[in-house]
Image (cartoon, rainbow over all chains, first blue to last red; front, side):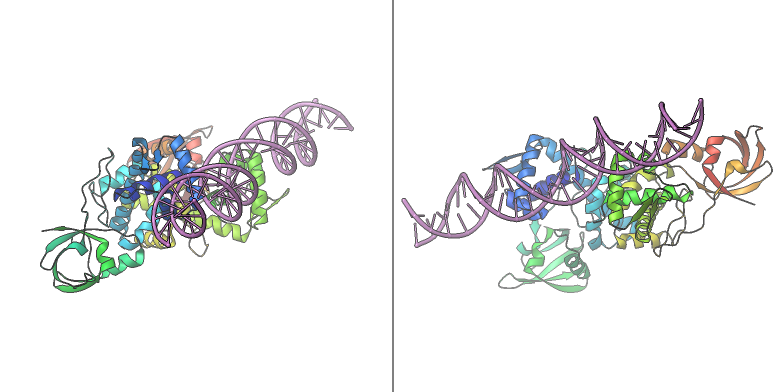
Length: 217
Length: 217
DNA sequence: AGACCATATTAGCTTTGCCTAAATACTGGA
DNA sequence: TCCAGTATTTAGGCAAAGCTAATATGGTCT
């Protein structure tokens, strides 16, 4: 009825759709690392189950039932990530992979225990919001660091990447969620940003800055 | 190559074989809750992969390669059980089910972290030995409680059952691994045992006693 | 309009892992 | 020895999820 593959499809449709982008078969195929033909078949199946709708103009969108499942899976994923970091001290850049696998098989009981043990967290170690049981999703920032100007101060909210190497790199710079910073200088081509973090001064490039979301002020 | 189904088969062959019993298709089918015909097919496949051998006289037995995989899965299972009890305070009778699912997808890194965080435990919360990476298996008792006589003292080593209700029942009696006890009285038909545990006096029946393994002395 | 590129769909095949039903083999007792 | 009951194997099917290859659709550029 609700296989792992289905959960992965729904999760990725949700996450791809978040940014306002229209979700196409090929986009989804890329995310899922599967051929477009396979996606075509699966989407048909999901439509039959009333979990998604697909049309030329809207692209692939989730129904309420589909979104419910997607949010459940994402909740599992992010709770597990938090748990592994908190309880086990696993570095934040190593938890994604494991959560990816365990998210599909987390019992409600254990889910609740983790939630409780972590004090009902609203965000995971990367700053991504953890959906609640009722389907609501905590607020999160959509302002990428590369849109700020020299002199701006703010707080890092989330890092939008799961690649362990990149996360490790960002972590080594001290740029974790909740970290406050001040922009010292922005290169004329917007491709290099200098910031002050604590007493340190760090430089980051555009591609990294794009993945860091912040609140200003 | 090494699917979940395969791991489950190998694990169950190992565990069924432990007690000296010859492992037959039908026995395995019962354990795995599938039809004998399915087992027949799978065993054929496993033979082709050189993970098991099957013959009339020996029954189904693991090759070295097969045992290696079985022990890995069991190690995962028992580490996860221990982890959930330790880090999350999940009651010991509720961890089996979750471990059953996660055991197939535990990364080496996380496995090592758990092992280290728990202080390289030799036994899980039920007293079952946790195989080591090198394939060695810590000692464990094979003396069931129902073979003792009045006056004997000893220590509970393990509880050989995964049914949550039964474990809860046994737990409520205070009969956890490492608990010391003294046999007060054994019924004439061997079907009721009275023991002293701490300051408490508890009675257990034959079926429960059979599942409790102890060391005497 | 025609050519070309990206996207989407269809058909047909493969593997895994289970199933049922039927056929065969084995074993223990009368 | 024969027969019943148990154990095993074979054959044929099905659903999930992927694949390739071929075809359709739909712009965009010239």
